Length: 154
Image (cartoon, rainbow, N blue to C red):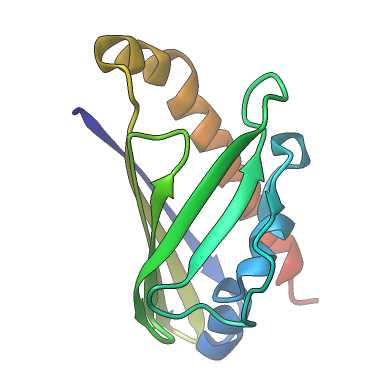
C-alpha cells in the first residue's frame, strides 16, 4: 500500500487555549469544510471536546455528490497540544491526521500532517495523482482561508 502525505502550517493570532477550544470541538469541522463536500456530522451525541477513543461518524460527498460514510476515531489526545484522528471506515485505505498546536512568539503555529493511502492498487495511485491529492490540497487550502477569517484580529 503506497502512502502519501499532505502537510500544512497556519499561524493564528490566538491563544493556545482558544485554538484547542475550537479545533477539539468535533462540530467545528463542518465550519471549515467546503460546502460542496456535503460534509455532515451524523453522530447522535458528541461531547464539546474530543477525547481518546471518541468515534465520530460523518457523511461526505467528495465526488459527484455520491454520499460516503466516514467513521473516524480520535486515537491520541495531548491537550492542548495535539490530537490524532484515524479513519475506521471511509473512502481511504488508510487515513492518519495529526493536528498540533505550538505557541510561537505570541501566536499559535498549527500544523496538519495527513498520511493517507488510496485503495485499488495502481488504479488508486493514478486516481490519487489525477484527482485526490489535488482535492485534498484544495480542502486544506480552503480550511486555511476560513480559519484565518474566523480568527482574524481587527
